[in-house]
Amino acid sequence: HEADAYRTDLMTITRYVLNEQSRNPEARGDLTILLSHIVLGCKFVASAVNKAGLAKLIGLAGETNVQGEEQKKLDVLSNEVFVKALVSSGRTCVLVSEEDEEATFVDPALRGKYCVCFDPLDGSSNIDCGVSIGTIFGIYMIKDKENVTLEDVLQPGKNMVAAGYCMYGSSCTLVLSTGNGVNGFTLDPSLGEFILTHPDIKIPKKGKIYSVNEGNAKNWDEPTAKFVEKCKFPKDGSSPKSLRYIGSMVADVHRTLLYGGVFLYPADKKSPNGKLRVLYEVFPMSFLMEQAGGQSFTGKERALDLVPTKIHERSQIFLGSFEDVEDIKGLYAAQA
Ligand code: AHM
Ligand code: MG
Image 1 (cartoon, rainbow, N blue to C red):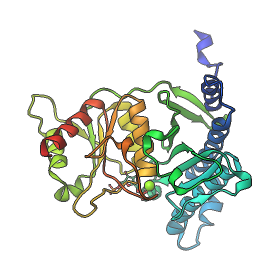
Image 2 (image 1 turned 90 degrees about the vertical axis):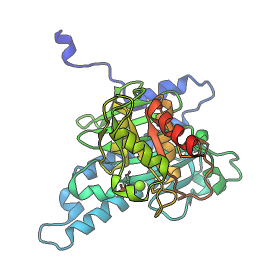
Image 3 (image 1 turned 60 degrees about the horizontal axis):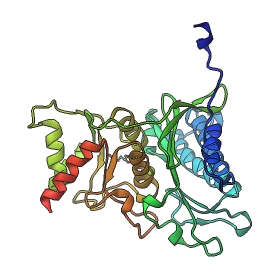
Image 4 (image 1 turned 60 degrees about the vertical axis):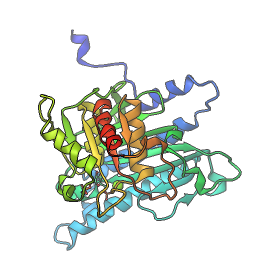
């Protein structure tokens, strides 16, 4: 069909979120506005990561310290853009960023009912070699508008109203859930719009890939070691799993979501709570996994049941295909 050469009915992310909003008669468009500010931040970072405005970002050729400067600039710049976009949306009251030690309480005149926890540029060790990096975010609603405290972000992940990530890779993909399934949108740079390209993502029930930093194996606990052993030397006659590890959570989780399998960042003797942060890494990704039909487990409990006690808290994490995570849960149960 000649008519098929161009798609003419484009589902942009804004149109999608507005459609979702119209399903709730009480919604007044606040989440739509908030998300459009997050989308703006993602577009800015996408452009910066692609080295748009190259000269401004890294300075002119011949200047010293280009490497370090550039990396620092991109992290800090991304954080500033997100903080300003979120505050100016007029829909936020508390912000938690991986880049800022303290939470940001929005000026009362600009306050709205949402709290946003985010990692503006995760996987920053991958910037210099051009490997995929990403932004991760989770959104809560405040309990009491007159009385906003840190407690509003120290809630279990299951209380989130939306979560997502944006991957700056060979294409720029934003994956979002507002609690009604998971959808993926790809940035069309010529339009400057995220277009729905991956509707209703469901993770395969079982996968053929495991993803972990095996360099830490010497310090793992027994269930983790047993699980990885089982991936490599299955005893039930199945084929061994393939190992894929990028070291960039957004890229590793994105592949896990689309192809299936399991991503783990376990605790070890040196880091008893693992590495990844609960509020803006573990929770948003766990929310997306569950919404896509997968699971997420901390070694003790469902990840989204965890109640954080401080904003930069860490937790070990096992997430991915339902059956693969079921295996890990079995190994922890057997040890207990
Ligand atoms: P960062 O916030 O310092 O970038 O660290 C987070 C990243 C994740 O993207 C990734 O999953 C993990 O660190 C990889 O850690 P490691 O290098 O220990 O395997
Ligand atoms: Mg991070």
